[in-house]
Length: 125
Image (cartoon, rainbow, N blue to C red; front, top):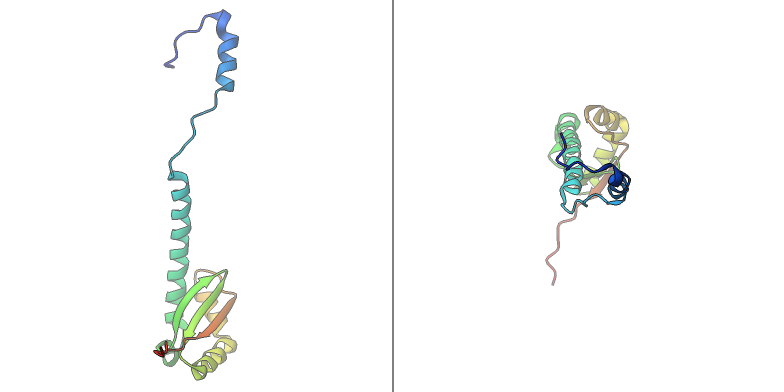
């Protein structure tokens, strides 16, 4: 059943020693690393898609058009807003139970929502 030729009994001990001392051939391909990264990317895609769906379903319509999701890292959701007024209104909604509602609707844990003011880029040279 093996492809190995029959070893004479007097060389059996030497053959066992060779098999135990020979290192297996190293895997020089990137397959294992790429597979691990693919798993992480799939997990990230599922979590971010769930957060976007939850955001669209839970945030009030008057705030939804004024906000943009910037990212999710370490259970902290970053949200962009255009000015302080929208920031204040979004903060009030989150503190009034919106964050709990959002966390329940999302398929990933959200322990904090970070609100970032997105200033338009100035064209001063």
